[in-house]
Amino acid sequence: MTIQARKDEHIRICLEHDVQSEVPTGFSSYTLEPTALPESDARAIDLTTTFLGHALDVPILISSMTGGSPLGTRFNTILAQAAQTYGLAMGVGSQRVALEHPELEETFSVVRKIAPRRVLFANLGAVQLNYGRGIADCLRCVEMIEAQALILHFNALQEVLQLEGNTNFSGILKKVSSLCRQLPVPVIAKEVGCGFSSQDARRLEEAGISAIDVAGVGGTSWSAIEGYRSSDAVLHERFRSWGIPTAQSLVSVRTVAPHVPLIASGGIRSGQDIAKSLALGASLAGIALPFLKAAAVSKEALMRFIETLVMELKIAMFCAGARSVADFAGVSCLFCGKNSWVNAATAR
Image (cartoon, rainbow, N blue to C red; front, side):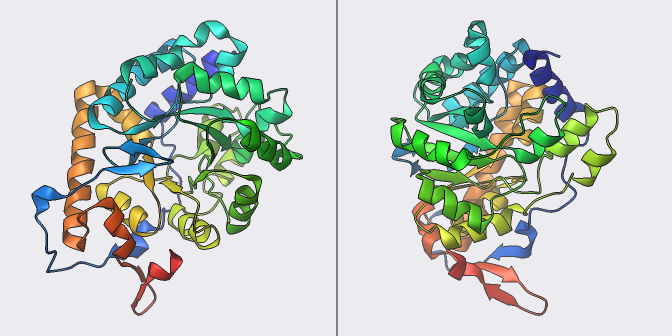
């Protein structure tokens, strides 16, 4: 199967099958401490923020999904329209396919044409640094969409379960460190559904990574996706929920890397999830599958979904006493223990 066909197959599986992890994200164990005295006007809630020095209208990222095929072009077009309209950041799917087939670059570069003023992230698998890809290829990915940063995605579980997987991750951190020193734009480390541990975060920070997308368990399972492509899905099913729940990964990474900007993704499904992520130390919240499913219905359905997310986020902020995204530094997020609520602010 060609890499283009595989990308389309991944999209179809996500739209037609249950690819959700069986483990919850962990956000249900947290609540924002409400205030009856918000001392603000709900109509004046400010969602603007900055990430890696770039302005955003809302603290939401359309997480990396697709590109490299006609179907990918269709979805990238709709998603880029949403990013442009609402001021969201957007990542594209792995650009390896365009490196191998330059005629497919348009399936990615279309996002910059449609969203000329938005923050865009290029994307390449970190393991590709062990398979002949280097600084020139990463620069090409960045230039292809005029990106403000490069996402290096870490997908060890997916690669080892994928029929066509690249499984040699030996010495990868040294190459990541070299890339961070040479690339003229920031490098973001992203998991793809298994989460980063505190040890991972320390090593990535030492390597020079500019930001971390924890992408924990609780959302789309790439083990499940690859299982639908396999003639024997038993092994894939056993790893459907492998990894660290998103909220736990976020708290662990924030604890050991307090100055590294974080993206919370992996099962983010609501405005309240976004608010909790921000209160626990994330700068942005990334969403993929819900955006893909809404876009598959229509552009209008995607817009309605985004507007609902934004409204719920504003309400949660207002009722927690946060007038702006920056105010989340002073908002308490409470963890539900066995018998009581514990303030989770110490995780920040």
